[in-house]
Length: 294
Image 1 (cartoon, rainbow, N blue to C red):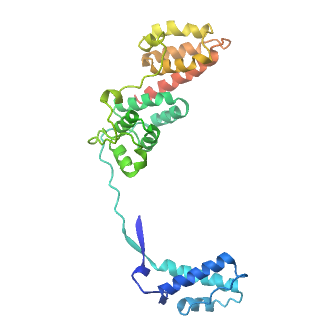
Image 2 (image 1 turned 90 degrees about the vertical axis):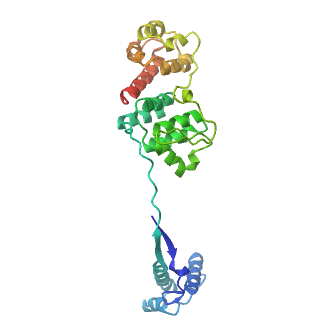
């Protein structure tokens, strides 16, 4: 992008007259335009080339003469500006050899953001663990969403690599007191306390009741035998939704196909069918999370 400087700063005349005179005349035209020609007469045309153009227009009405005067002065004022020196080009971010995650994975992320934000942390970690990197637009959105959470911010920076540092350098408002550093392209820059690798590379815990905690590490058969009968028998209702969302969001990935099949098989007449339908959507979303980043 080119900057611009006014030649009026370097030249004494523009359009054949002193620049200060042209500016003063322009200000008078602006004043009359605001008040209206019925309340104040337009200023007399300037002496010189600008005035000659207005006079040659042979306008009889004050408003018509003023329009010609405004058009002429505007052209002269625009012509009085010269392009400045080219602005320095932005330096690109450092090279990151990791491939950008596939478009279908980004589509899944957008769906998770809208419908299942509880899964976004897992999506970012999966990007990181499977050797992908975040696109720039996703990086900006995730940095903005991380707020003051230093762990999430550091996780996003690692998954984005040098692009995250580049974005934070050019959009300092995204720092928001969090952490920036640890990308694959260079050293760590810390704005606040630096989270440990264990914090950054693991999922944040979700609240699950003690009686359901064993299911977090259970295999598919144990999970289905222990949990799914409760849906068929109508023992789960709306009050169970938060803890069951947490359970299905943190159970082993190998459990998901069996869970999806079992939830889809719940009798529509069961009092738990509505909750089963919601959780089945979560299971499908989490399955897409992993398949699109495979």
